[in-house]
Length: 104
Image (cartoon, rainbow, N blue to C red):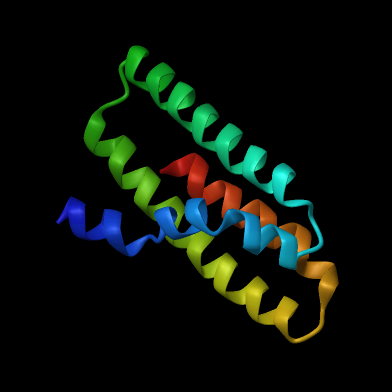
């Protein structure tokens, strides 16, 4: 079941197409790649700290999947709005995309 959720989040699609996604939002592709890489790195470090302080794996997994679900809904809504011409929603879209990579 975990593997299914892992594949359905689309985090690899975000990582692979990050240059195109961020370029279409008006952000240079290099900055988009750095944002994805840094958010992934910080997520791994944060997860390691949570393991070190004794937070259970089940709780961490549940929390991560709930937050990824919230970020995926946000990504869907904000990308729909940005494609409709509302460019002011590109910042929340970037936050949702980097949040997905952070929580993964």
